[in-house]
Image 1 (cartoon, one colour):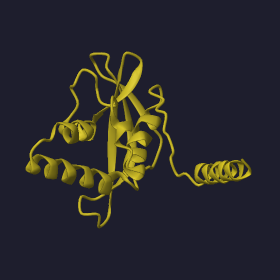
Image 2 (image 1 turned 180 degrees about the vertical axis):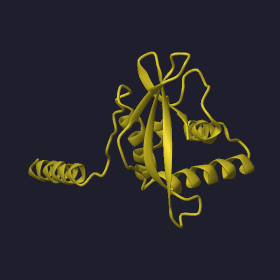
Image 3 (image 1 turned 135 degrees about the horizontal axis):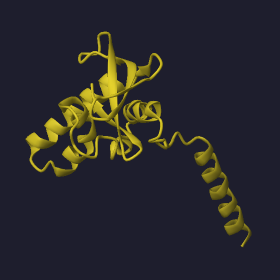
Length: 154
């Protein structure tokens, strides 16, 4: 009985140490804040937590190719069946991580409204170049749909 109790205490202690040293982090997106949506992209790349990318693109699917590529990374991995598809999906993921893992918002968000009433938020950011040899100044454009902000254009 004493050995069993000691063993359980050791397991409990190891569990507490493991939890304390855990690097698991979570990111909760505030879709009311354009910066939060953009920071979710950076978080996903930096932490290799691509699940955070689900649902951040324009729900009307009118976004550009670059933002669609971000939003379909997980889906492409899940539907890949052949070796070639899996390799292509992994290359796309690696390219995304290289480009966004050290990304950073570099200025204030600018809000604008189109003639048709559509609302946009322009978020200035730094991204790595495709080959990782420098940085690019880019503006990520979000669109407001149903009161929330979504990736729209880069």
